[in-house]
Length: 116
Image 1 (cartoon, rainbow, N blue to C red):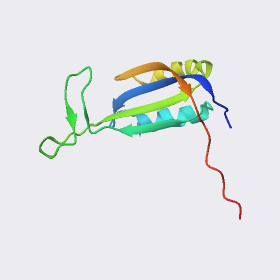
Image 2: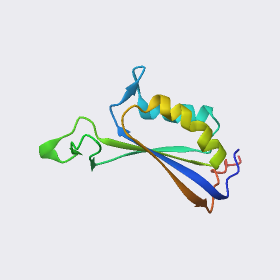
Image 3: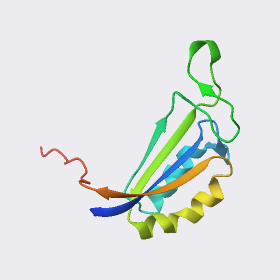
Image 4: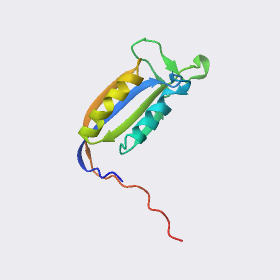
């Protein structure tokens, strides 16, 4: 298990939920590759409304249902590991936004398996 404490980098990737790569959801491929790269973790969040470089508003509001809601994938790990992963994001993310933030990790712990 990856130990993570103190200063780290957070990469946040903003894409559309229907963006694909090789007929798979792009967010799923990013998570799969982050896992393969041994990164500390990745989480996908589905947005309820937003717009980006295209200036088109995507929303879940009933009267203007969107076909492509915003999705954010957040990955946090050490600066070295995140920066090493950026080349894969560059290959995968052709439309969207990728940002980096320095963060401080206070606690990073997995669930304890129950003993029987």
